[in-house]
Structure formats: C-alpha cells, structure tokens
Length: 416
Image (cartoon, rainbow, N blue to C red; front, side, top):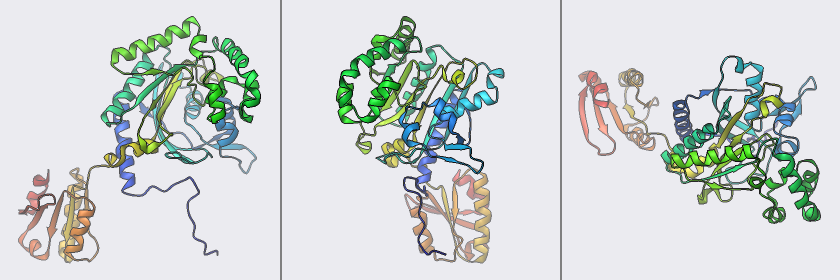
C-alpha cells in the first residue's frame, strides 16, 4: 500500500472543535428564530438527478454550465451533488404531494452544497447553507415578513448589513425587457466575454450577473428591469417596499441585481456587509421569489419564495463572537475511587443540563487544572482520595479562584 499521506479534497475542509462549537452556536441561533416563525426542518439527499438542476436552476447559469459535480452511476444515470437547495425542496414538495396536505408550507434547511468554482474568502467547493422556503403564498406580505426576520437575525448577532432589493418581474414582463437587453448589448457583442456573447442569444438576463470586469463596465449602462415592469409586478414590488418601511427595515433598490439562478421571478434580495474579513465576497444572504418553479418541475402552479445564508461567510464576520458558551464544569480527580466518583458526579450533572468534562487519564492535578483553563471551564470540582473518605468535594470558581468545600449531595444545587 502507498505510504502517501492522505488529505481532504481541495476546497472541502474538515471542521474540528472548537470551530464546530461556533458553527453550532450560529446554526442554533438561526433555528431558534426560524422556528419562532413556524418553519419546520426538511432534509433532502445531497445527490439528485442532474436533470433537476438543469431544469430548475437553468442550463445557461454558471452553476449548471461550469460548477456542478456531475457523474454517471453504475447504471449510467447522471447524478449531481446538489449545488443549491431550492430545487431539491421543490422536488420533495412535488414528489410527496405536500400541497394536498397543507395550503402553505414553511421549511428551513441546513447542510452542505457543492460547486466546483474558484475558491475565495468564504467560498469553498463544499460549503454550507442555512435557508428557508415558503410555498403557497403569493401576497407581498411574505417578502416583508421574511426580510424582516432576516433583519432581526443579523441585528441580534450585531452584524451590520445592507438590504438590497429588486424585482426581476414575471413571465408577462420578460419579453419586453429581453428585447431591451438585446437591443442594448448587441452593439457591444465584440467587447463581451465568450459566455456573455452566447447568453446574449440564449438568455440575455444572465448577462447582468456576469462578474468579468470588462463586461461589468458595459452592464452598468444596461436598461433597468424596474422600468420594464408591468402594472401588476410594479404594484407588488411597491407593496414590499412600503411594508419594509413600516417594519423599520432600511433597504436600497438595486435595479441590476438579478441573482445567479434562472428560476427567480418578482422580488429578489440580498443582505450584504462591509466587513473587511470578507473582501469582495460580501453577500451574506441571497433570495427571492420563484413563482413558476413548482409548475416548471411538474407540480401544480404554486407561488414560492426563499433564501439561503452562507454559513462560512457569517462566521467570518462573527469572529470569536460566534463561539458557544464555555464549559460549565471540569472535574479534576486523582486516585481510583476518586475517578469512579468523578464519573458518577459528571453523569448526574450532565443529566441536570450542565456541560461537563472529566479527566480520565492518570495525570496530576496541575495538568488537569491547565486543561480546565484551556477548555474555558467556569468551575472546577476537585476530588482526591481524602475527599472521597470525607464525602466532600472542592468547588473552585475558575474566574475568581474562590474555593469552597461542599458535601457531595450539595454540589448540583450549588452549581445550578
């Protein structure tokens, strides 16, 4: 066998303690808020039929054209590691006929996504998202509620964000806007990148999402989609803006924001930050309406909206503030009978809801207290053979160094 050292695949990273504690704290914060808005958790496979993403995300998107991890299985079926979650949620919604059981569906999800793209700050090839989907609501009040929920989430985390808002219109608005884009970009065709030249013929709206600097210069002068909105789409978008103003959520309208997925219709939004830790990869949240996607994938006509949060980027902004609470108790013991008692006490304290660690190795008190400090333990409980015989333990406050002796049956109450 080869002696070559094995390592993780480039762009797919291991997460180890204590970093995972910061992840859990952020994920728990999101879940708490989502569940207070009546969302329930959904989990879908990380592998899906490639056709789902080609039909759902769009064949002319960068995701489908360049970034998916796609392969044939042993029966020759084309499968893809999910690059995003909305298409998978819609597939599950249709497959399980959820619309027959409930008029409105509220789901939240978390998990890994996969895209083969150039790695940058906060962007990896296996990356994690937390997001929500609402299916069955056409009213603009759902956008207002959803963006208000996100604004609250980041306020509680003390992360400054800017809410950027736009409307890409519906099917009835697209033909006129498409014609305007073709008329504008055609004289610039030679100056566009190869992808944009091809998209000009297939899907001109995708040009607005190009990141190539030379193309961006041209895109800055493109017609605004807001100017092409019909009466119904315009009224909906204005209602969203009025509702956010009522909630006290500040926002800016960004007329050329289209998002990188073809399924969006109507309202789209992003939460961006100016945090230096993210450099140019400053989008923390992205989402919007996708009122046609359920029907496009074979389900009943169903209005829908959702968003996703990039977990890695959020944690980069949070820094050490995203860490979970420190250890409640570290039990220091020496001697056979003392360690047996330590195991029993640790079990009882954990049942009582405390976060407890214990030293199982045969090492001295000094090394154990050093480890308790490293684990940021609030308290240390010391048990030696003398304490076992006397039926007591020593409880030390690791912040103040105050120490007291307690009867064993008094320990749990004292810690609580």
